Image (cartoon, rainbow, N blue to C red; front, side, top):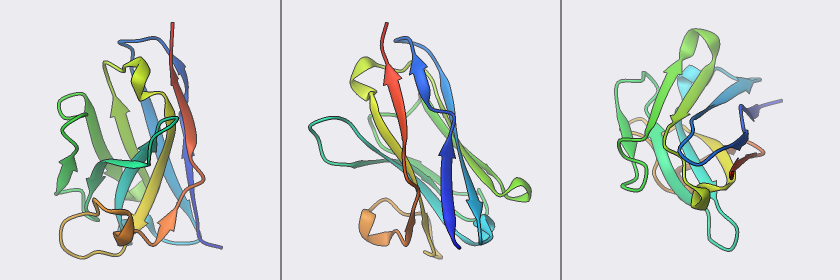
Length: 125
């Protein structure tokens, strides 16, 4: 069964850091480009970052540029999202998503074939 699983979420103070991981079972993550989306309460889910299958191409939303870093270790079948300087308004559920797109990486939900179940990130003092 093809599955994406996020981990590493939790409670962090404003200005703090957190690293999310996205692991895959039932398929080879290295065959897919991966994106991170997030949904904060009361808002639609939004794209945050993505990385292509080899890890040589990354993109970030303006809102996270310079604070978030996406990376991957295909040998470990895992993609990471390192988040720094987190803000209370970034509290929400973070999702990893896999796309078979062959050029670049996915920045739209319509490009995604598989979703993780999401993980809660709470930024609060």
